Length: 315
Image: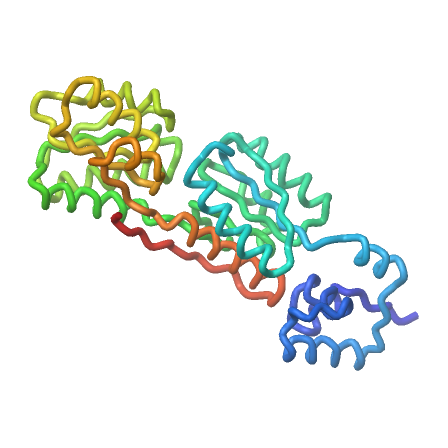
């Protein structure tokens, strides 16, 4: 008996994703005319008739993308998620939001749940070490945020470029005694890469490097500023705007208004509360939009995974 074709077979023969075939079958007007024509031609050539159960499932389901963030209270991740949602909603997709709290075990638990739910795609904030071998079966419908890995689609931030840009700006303002407030290097991006960029810049410019590491909290910024501040300190570069707010609070209490405070992240609270502080936009919202576009390209057009770096901009 000849094997009966499935939607997956039609998708493969048409060179599109399964969700695109479903949208063609459901007469979705958002499908590009040339794509619709190609899919319908394959359907006609093979006499494909969707099963009653498949039609019933499609009529009851929605196009859904899972988004796994590290922290729900992260301003930077919220900016990125806003860009993702605007893009996904515009293309007719809904989203399920989950939080990992930087736990690899929680990430894999969430991935298993999303896979069981049959979501069309997944965007994952991957700040910590993960079992990428176990995630390999998902890579065609997965986009990593903030961290790249061979074979996976990703959108990363320009961590080294951002720190270099901020340090160069401070030097132009006459600062040479510049301390760095960072986070633990177990965080490869915000932690290790931004610290490495600071140390490399100091080495290249002949500056004395002074750094201290903590976590991403306001309290950590306050404590690290107290630890690093000396009579000669001219500026503090902080790995995030949250750290910068904590550091600025300490400087305010010490009456050290001459010390420049800089952060990374474009959190409007920093410059609202401390107008003299500087912040750099790492392009979080644009990165979120790009991640959503890459994911849609993968699941709807079978595009290959790509690695993208979001541009940063000094505010």
